[in-house]
Image (cartoon, rainbow, N blue to C red; front, top):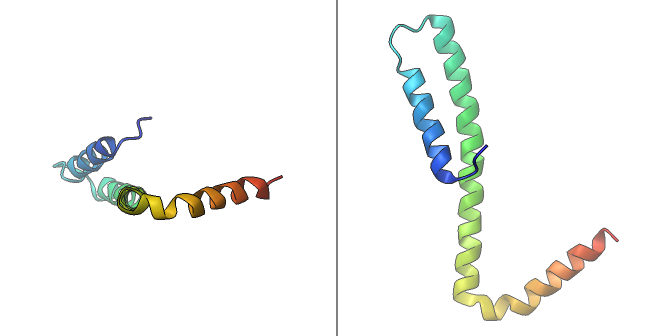
Length: 83
């Protein structure tokens, strides 16, 4: 499985093509709609996570010096929690 946003885009367009196929029976349409709903739900989470990662990178790029010490402390504390 590939894990790139471009692959997600390809999956979404492939699902759109399946939904628009002529000659699908009502049952086939129902199955494709349920599949599309599941794909959209997972896609929303992936896009949301990517957006959060982008915001984190932007904060570090713009204000990294101010956050360097608190971030390293948070990471060290978290790694010791499991010990």
